Image (tube, rainbow, N blue to C red; front, side, top):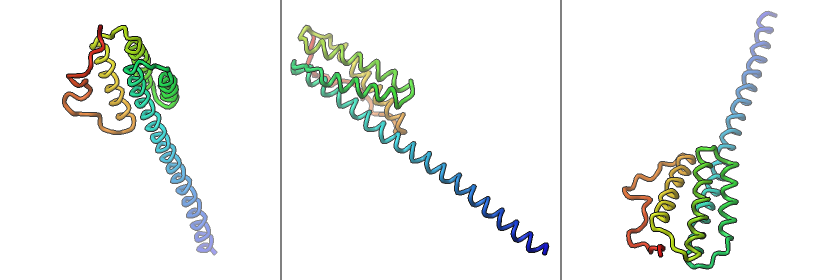
Amino acid sequence: MGSAIVGVIGTLLGLLIGAAAQQVQASRSRNWQQADLLRTIKRRVYAEYLRSISASYAQALSGHRTRTEDASLLAATAEIEILSDTEVSAPARELTNTVINVHSEIASGAGVPKSDIEKADRDRYKVIDIFKADLGFKPRTTPGAGQLVPNAPDHSP
């Protein structure tokens, strides 16, 4: 009878340990899936943010500024603030404000110092590096990356 009890207890303990291990694994799997989903969403939002900056610049250069890209940029910035920590969202918000101001000045034709445009572009590349780090990618290491082309048009008066 003693060996039967030991066998039953051993079987029950095996079931409990197996069930606990399965719960732990299921929890880990859920956490991995949630982290992967968050990375995917961030990647989409970061791409939309950067696309909006480029489109806003194109509108500014054409002089036909409809502000649609400002709205897209502000919407992407709001999503970044919801999805990301302050280390990511604060520089993105600062860049959004800079981009809207500089692009508005370019579109008005009043003339913008080339240094302001270059600073905005450098800040954009810094934010790209922040986005890449947040997604687990290596930042750019190319010498001179983030600098405007030397013969870029000058929008100063």
